[in-house]
Length: 50
Image (cartoon, rainbow, N blue to C red):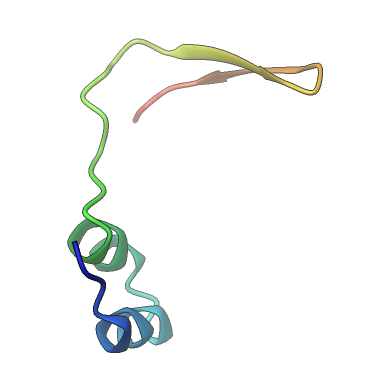
């Protein structure tokens, strides 16, 4: 996968983060609905998808 840096820059400057992450970085929402518990440096948190 190659990244179009010019397009990324334009999307960043236009604050179009959804397009940037989905179209350029090929990220998508997780299909997992169950909340996940995580702990970082002693801090516990619950992560869920909305």
